Image 1 (cartoon, helix red, strand yellow):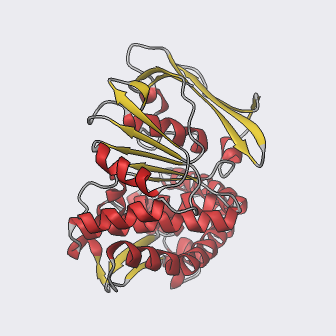
Image 2 (tube, helix red, strand yellow):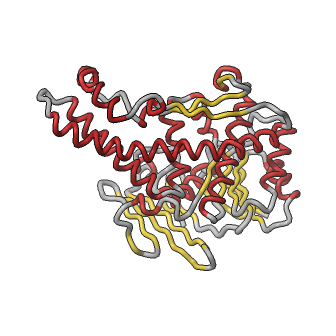
Image 3 (cartoon, one colour):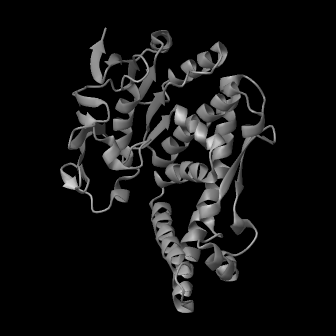
Length: 358
């Protein structure tokens, strides 16, 4: 059930446990529907940082409610937000004390046009990708991330003060060091395990032997974080922020040893990103022992017919669980359905209204 979420005024939908296809012109609300499903997994929108931006204009609230079958049991997830009030997020009618406790309960992977920011955007986008994957199966990692960011915020506040309190710096830096080591170690291990899956998906989609890689870059590879923070205090006070730590980590995305942002064609970039996310799906499935929901938003754009065909064959396999897919081209959706031997439903989306199509 969706009420007043972005362009969706009201929708009551029952989905196929396997394949759900949404077609319609651009700007009709297809992506917003996928975003509502995304919201119930991550307690936030895939696109809008500020929650109130998700409320349909001129309305005072939005509500999303979903019923899931997990391990044979029905689970109810509910989110409601009124303007100028605190967001409510409930599981089986019980409100969470911390929203972070919900992350990983309903694992989900989304592939969308916004993924281009992973290649073209700043390091923050790539860190968010890594953090989102690991946080869905590793609670100690998510806790360490929250502790680190809190300590970083406090240290940055100290840097802006006129007086220099050495003891306070020591306290917050120690917390950053303890949490930062967990974050650095888990990111390192994740990328080592993740790479073979990524390479395999890339080669399957593009039918080539091009080599893809993700090179982890962290200041902690060269020096101890405690030393880095201590030695940079004076310069950090001049600039007003913390320049050393795992919050500066980056992923160098390479194709045949060169940065893909420099040499990649549109098709190669799209293939790289789709392979990255499908590898994320496999990784989470193994780590969680639970099949994630897969959201595919307009993924066939800028791909040649051969790569489209490879992706269609991949998502039609039994390996995947419940899939939500959008496209302006109904023919792509029929190609996928034609290769499947599973239940499916097709929905038409127009001006925020969603109807079951034959």
